[in-house]
Image 1 (cartoon, helix red, strand yellow):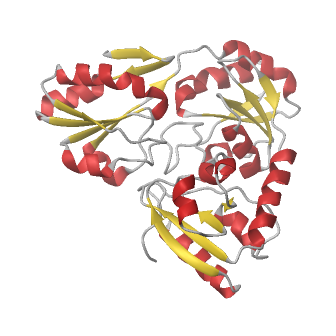
Image 2 (cartoon, rainbow, N blue to C red):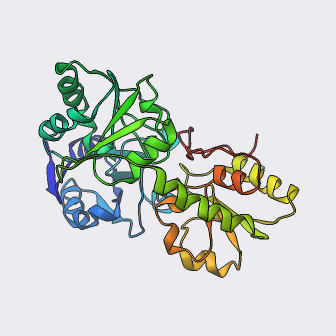
Length: 335
């Protein structure tokens, strides 16, 4: 095992090195998410020792859906660090190396037991803790809880694994859900996408809490209200293979025009505040990663909506629906 431990993550390069040596790969591209960028020099050194030349992507990387396609075209093999395989159509030239957090989940899962009021609980986590899912299920079942974990799905490769754009693993007929991981975005999305009561347990901080969605919904409806008055609206279509939703973008653009809005379809790679401001629009709808609208909204000078939120702004629907992407590598360019 060729194992690197950095920033609390375990990265096993053995499979990539085996492919490089067996296939005689001469040039390797390395793509690392921003939180693990500091591991790039050590990863490059280890790969170079196998005899291959290494090119590291200096651009941001936000997930398995965010492949550096230009670098991929320049190398014989791409080593994508930190995420599990998603885009099967590209996988013959990409090796996905997962980054795992070795922290034990036992204590925090046992602390979560007092929060549950139902007998059937869906167990979910991110890729960093996916290897612990059986351990979590075992603890719950040993205390009389029927623990369930769905998956894999077109976008995920592990039982119980969820993404910010995919919560299929939680749809197992449970009454409540336990999320294992850090941060609030995933458990909040889990609650919004499924309607279940969600308990979030963080193995790093040791905190356990029930996720409350009221403040989130009030905030989002305020943004939707602001966007409903906008006359010029952009529909953002991502160039990233796992986020590209052309059919959805065309449908939303057509809906906007039917309501008298001035619509602009924008094909874009990196969605950033200054690029949106330069377009001179009053609001935009992101058909790319849901986190752009939900996690980064305060960075933008105009309202940024998800597709379901735009439908609410147009008066086309009343219920709030969390935005998910069911397809592995986004939608086709046309139907």
